[in-house]
Length: 182
Image (cartoon, rainbow, N blue to C red; front, side, top):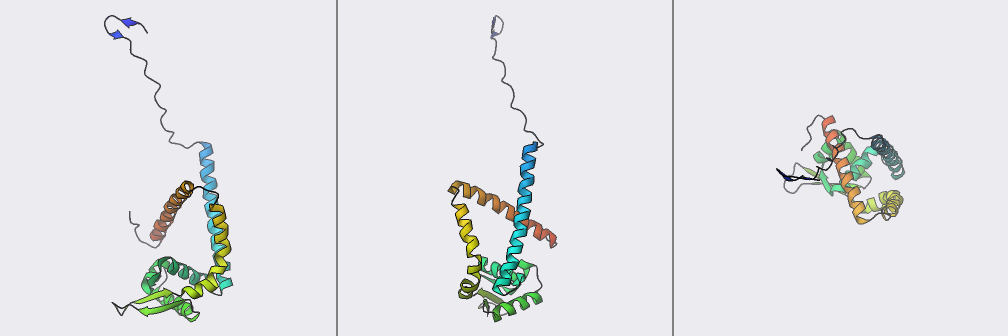
């Protein structure tokens, strides 16, 4: 670069600007996203089929198993909370709870602070005896797969899964006529 007597040294040429992010994903990215969505659909279908076969093995129906799962995840729910979580009517939940209580999976207790409310508790002994063995091979296989990943990789997968779960929860709320919370 030559010095110009009027301006001093010529400035260095501007580096090439960073290419603008491509608003349209390339074909490879689109293919991966499509494959991932198909994998989610397949996993969802298999999970539903596994739930149905597991419920049959346990000796209950799929709706009852879903309610047991919700109770296991929350510790306890009122009958009304369980109805809202499942989208079932309170009358239907009463039938579910009658069946589960008769089979020894749950017990209902009046809320100590509000006697109008019924709190549903899971019977862990019955669950461990009849439900856990059905799902134990899946849990064992999952742990073997998880062992192949670092803690950081599992944390990334967990974060991604949490976002997917929220997307599905929001859509469930919308399908039931509600508005998802932000």
